[in-house]
Length: 116
Image (cartoon, rainbow, N blue to C red; front, side):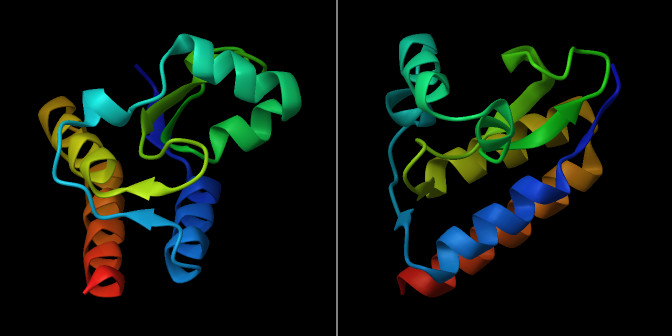
């Protein structure tokens, strides 16, 4: 698999955190992670690049105009979720994507500082 860090998503997430668009939640990411219907509704009103901003990973083997190109979601299309960053960090670590793991960890630390 050729998944790499999506630098545009990292920049976007930092901006959202700076603006206070965060959820310092402690639940399970599965409770907040947008489902396929929510993703499709977002894409009805936004470009695929905007969808990509909500994903820390980019799979260059997938088509540019497909949802499958984007991996490691961290938010709900409105806010950055603490549990989303934790999930992205843990999955990236398990799958050996150290650049994505590191970026998720840095964003998580920034979010926690902003929330305190």
